[in-house]
Length: 115
Length: 114
Image (cartoon, rainbow over all chains, first blue to last red; front, side):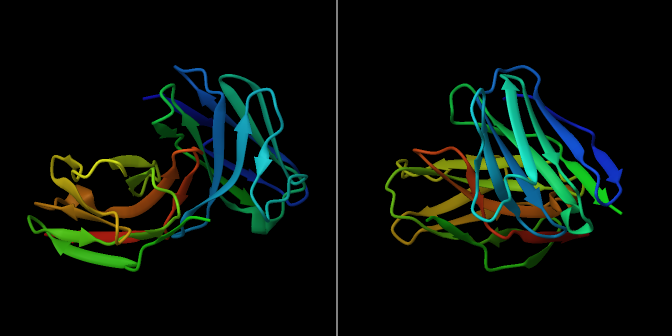
């Protein structure tokens, strides 16, 4: 399956600032990537679907102006949390659809702490 | 919209014993995929087992097997000969044939005691 990396693994930022999280498909060109959010001891909630070369599709209730997703290449998708607030503190996970479209591989996740 | 329900927030099992985690789902589709994922303390999502809805045979991966009841929309995971390393949060997930995003249940935290 595809190897997926995320950077950074943990980031602390101050309230009001923006932070960018990268998701890379290391050995596969991914036309589709997904971004999930997970609060402690809770499930993964789909935030958006990122398609290379087009605008992301956001799930209901997810603010697209706050969570900016860019999928400019077949190996990289970025999630930018703008004007972060403490309630945005969470674990963000990306996943990649592999070539046969039957396999979904997950990145290791990024822990965001907003102080 | 599809939904996935895991009714057991926590389960416990002793080493070498067998435990079954429950999962039900709701869908109007006839073709889809079902998954069980393991999330250890590292929080890396690990695929445990996958089932295609069109296959009647229950999927098996070593000590892990499922009981897939399509009519009942039930998809339970059985872990045999439980090991300490099986302790983790387990998520049941649904994936439509048409789309590719996974829809997760709320998860079951499994603890294993020696």
